[in-house]
Length: 161
Length: 426
Ligand SMILES: Cc1cc2nc3c(=O)[nH]c(=O)nc-3n(C[C@H](O)[C@H](O)[C@H](O)COP(=O)(O)O)c2cc1C
Ligand code: FES
Image 1 (cartoon, each protein chain N blue to C red):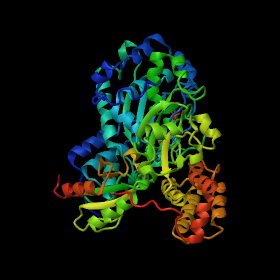
Image 2: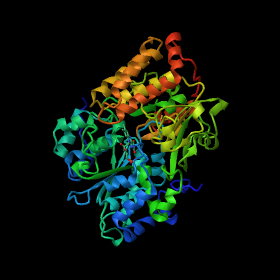
Image 3: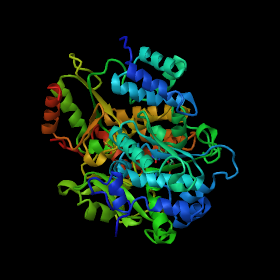
Image 4: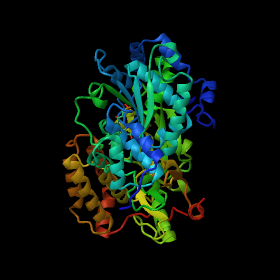
């Protein structure tokens, strides 16, 4: 497990959430969004810090967080490619899109490239079915995808754009 | 027909408060606060016939009326922006393109039910929408539309965005409340209903984004004006999210009762690549599939119910002749297995079994008795769970077997699909 120390700014933001709501536990998801933005993933070590800041037990935080699939765990690549494979996207080639990404990045869905740059995941409907096929990389949506667009997106990310 | 919710959808900076105001926004709010009592507003919304746009179609005014007036507890208004029903992408547009319309609706609705605190629960993936809403909310605070003593009326309201974490079930109203309380999103048994025991055990009203966005227009133009639009029992307009094999997918705001044919062919530009229409899911994947014979059905709560389906969230998924309905059902079985929260045994175990059996049929290992086995599992899930998710999970399976049984039989016998989607990603 990577030992990550949350930055002071993040710690402050989380501590401020503690008294914001009628119940402290309400602050768990908002705290996770803050952490997600800074670190990009979580592990038990991070949950412990959140728990301490919110004055909750680590177990309480872990119990809640483990329900929510939006937050990736430790080990996810720098760019988390989440391809929607639900119905509307599948009707317009989402399965082929996944295969194309697997071919380009030389990994299978669910895996991370050895340089730690990319993870491919398949996800459920992203609420963007009118612009299918769709994928989300970290917080950004990419819509109406074609092979040429995917090439460009990967190229830009590799260059750190 | 003139659009109501989408009237300014193409104005690029409609999301900014000044543009919203220039286009007639925040005029319903002072009217509501100065000319009407909370009770007047509840009666007005009842008279308008406005029904919930989140899926169930429950009359909004009636729901508001269930909030106990004499309760000493604080009351809450929750806006459901979880938008998880596959095929649905309308709330995202309303949020990103016209957030103040929603916020104005939330303020008026909170006043009507006596809530001083409101949340917009938005699905985690909508990071952009959440940001847009946060900015819009702070603009509204600056102008005095939110906070203490709104427009000198004495009414106070605090509103904030609460981001979810990627769970479909959290769109179900009681799971949503559990989620805000910081718990796993497992639904609660009803009754008690949220109107009496909701968020933090306080009286709570929960409404969909589209439902609440309608409220300012009803206040401005009157209940009777609204009731005259659409159908007698399904009043107003509806935003249809059109996707799948159509030439012009997108969101279309049309009067309730617009024929499906008109939506697909006139607005959606017809079927892609000049193929034949095969089937349509009219209200999100939890609503029964319609065959192409029913393309003249009217799109409203009653007409779709009579046609053997439901209006649901208004997500219309169009499938052409190359679509294998077994594959469709298999894909959706994976969705429901993944999203089952695990609380009720029939849903948790049943959705897993359905997926396994669907997988073996899809992969050419199906057995003749599998079709009846699937139906048997379905009838043992439906109606036996705490929330309607169990009922929803069996819909794609039961309705595709009912209407396309020969494709299942073909699949089992020939170990492959009857039709092939071909290459779609280029
Ligand atoms: C499994 C499940 C998922 C749901 N997801 C949503 C959703 O994403 N958005 C929504 O508005 N309603 C959703 N609903 C319906 C809500 O429970 C609730 O009926 C609705 O928010 C009420 O608002 P309305 O009366 O304005 O439609 C869902 C229901 C179920 C059973
Ligand atoms: S099905 Fe892919 S975004 Fe909805």
